[in-house]
Structures are given as structure tokens and as C-alpha cells.
Length: 212
Image (tube, rainbow, N blue to C red; front, side, top):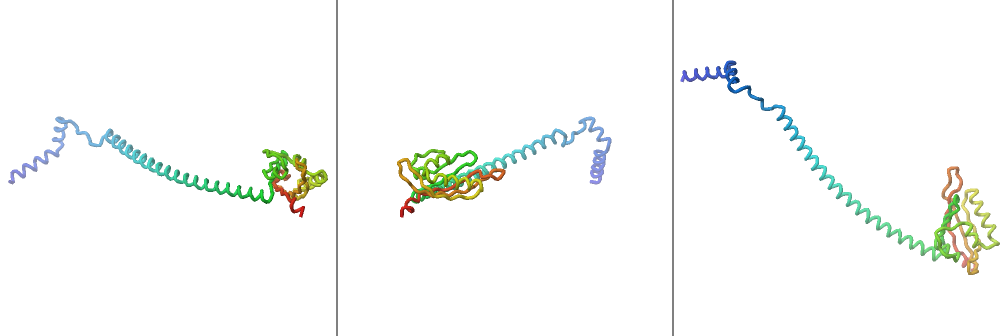
């Protein structure tokens, strides 16, 4: 046993000795390290590919979730808009019915272009056919000759002094009948140099009140 132990020690000393390393390299060549440049590049490429795939997976999943959430909000918004449109139509219908019952119409006038717009109720009060645009001059054509000068003065003063106006006068309908109307207006927009640019107002048939 002592001989074997001494033999093993000598063999181990020889294996780790420079002489043995020289002999081994001559027979087998210099051993290559495990972590060479090619293996490191390959490992890094695999890691990068895995991160890219993970990122793409998370991105597409979040995108799908975002699209679903966006579609849900869009559907909810469509329902809200449809409900509001329905409510608005009902409100407009009630408003028009109220105007018909009270014989009131609304108008608006662009003071820069002279163009005006009347509601259907005003055309009905004047006994005229509806059209998209009108003008103050067209309205004057319905005004009774004895009231025309007064109407012009009130309206012009309102524009010059930038104040609200209210005037009551008679109109002559195409069938020759005379109606009494009351109109009020207010300036709602001004130019850069603070001149009146837009007016809105209402006109009411007050003939029944005048006759009583």
C-alpha cells in the first residue's frame, strides 16, 4: 500500500508538471477554451431573439386588449350619441310644436352679408313659401306701408348703437289679410373692430291679442 501511494503521488506530480503539459500538447495540440467568440455571439443572438419574441408577444397582446377596449368605448359612445340625437330630435319637435301653438318663429341675420334665415313658422306667419335664405329687405316687403318707416328706424338704431331691439308692426299677407306681429332681436357677434356682425331674434303673431 505504501508503494502504491507513493506511485500515485509521483504520477500526479508528473501530470501537473510542465514536462507533461508539453508532451500532451505535442500529441493532442492546445485545447480550445469552451467560451470562444462564436459561442458568445450565438448565445447573445439567442438571448436577443428571445427578448424580441417576448416583447412582440406582450405588444400584440396589449394591442389586442387596447383594440377591444377601444371598440367597447366606441360602442358605448355610439349608444350615447344615438340617445342624445333621439333626445335632441324630441326636444326640437317639442320646440317646433310650441312655436306653432304660440305662433312664434325665429330668425337670424348676418349683418355683414345681409343674408338672413327664417324658420318655417315665420314663413307661415307671412303666408309665404319656405326657402333656405331670406333678407331684411324681403321682410320689409310684408310690412304695412304705414309701419315700414318705424320698423327701419328701430332696426337701424339697434345696429348703430349695438343694442337689443323690439318692435311691433303690421304685415300684409299675400292673400291681403293683415296680421299684427311683435319682433325682438339681439346682437350676438361682433367684428374685430367691435361692430355688430350677427343678430338673432324671434317674431310672434299677436293678432289675437290685438283683436281682444
